[in-house]
Image (cartoon, helix red, strand yellow):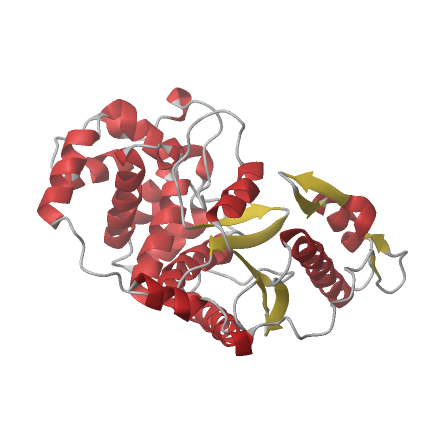
Length: 347
């Protein structure tokens, strides 16, 4: 079976790009009307051994362009230029391909890359329909997917976006919204990557909102499950419920509200995603009401005020109901007890 899977994702001799003409060097400058060119080469910084554009400098340059349409086009050119530099750093076999609003950097065979691009474009439209009035396409730029061939390269790249100290949960993909929003994953059979793409694209379509991690991740998990139904779970709902009841306590629930529990390296990571899924699923039963709640949700109080105003519920009482506990004030979001800034999700 493993041999079969490898054959599905590895290029055959006929699919190899060995015979293609040498690729041009990455652009050193990006031009736009009425302004001096942006020096891409001079803006590159080191990200754990990979080139990364100084996106603040790129944004300042783009914002200096007088014409709105030209700004969007210039930002897209900056994204493409960066990916071409990253392509060179990743080495032989990697190519930048595009379709519609999607850019793909990978070493995937041509047919698999084409299917991946088509899936991304289709999935964006489906997300906008499912999360009507909440999700939105970014104003500028492309939907960017980087597929690393090896887990080592993937984790080395994403480590640039994490603090140096601490333990962090493993992942198969994530959305990174630091200057230039893009999502990354590790090469695998396309079918197994599809849920990752759906999940991370949902984050991309929610990046305009200042929502807390639990709401961000709850929306992403539910949308992922709707667009890419998961296989039968190994644990029954009853077993999972028992684990929730045993794990969550008032102190730990504050980690959930602040988003820190999603970064745990123990079972708290899995249970955080599942609790977020359950809460969002219940709250979204009345979509019109939920839309108003989501649009007004604020990461600073973990959406507590918006829940009171638009859903007529106390978030602490809602969690207690899920866990079949008597409601207590200690379960309600208490920002004064949180350590560090709250998380926005899209881990």
